[in-house]
Amino acid sequence: MSFQAYLDNIQAKTGKTPDDFKAIATQKGFLHNGKLVEGIKAGQIIAWLKEDFDLGHGHAMAIYALFTGKKS
Image 1 (cartoon, helix red, strand yellow):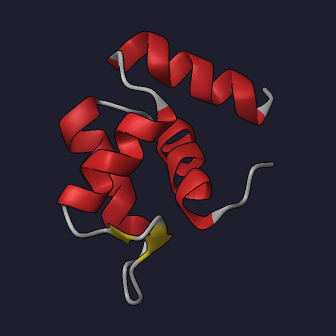
Image 2 (tube, one colour):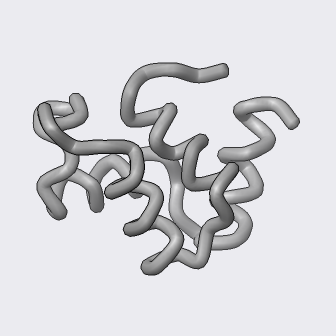
């Protein structure tokens, strides 16, 4: 599955766009000025996405990759 397909599936499931997730992550203190805050680990992001949005591990990792700037 392509990175974009992951994002499309996440949006279909949650109704949230990548920008929505960035805004929520900023409010939660995970991102600052669009960058992952130092010391925030992948496991924290994944746990949040699984709990709040019922995302699976692969889909949560796609959002984490979006936050870190990795898109493949």
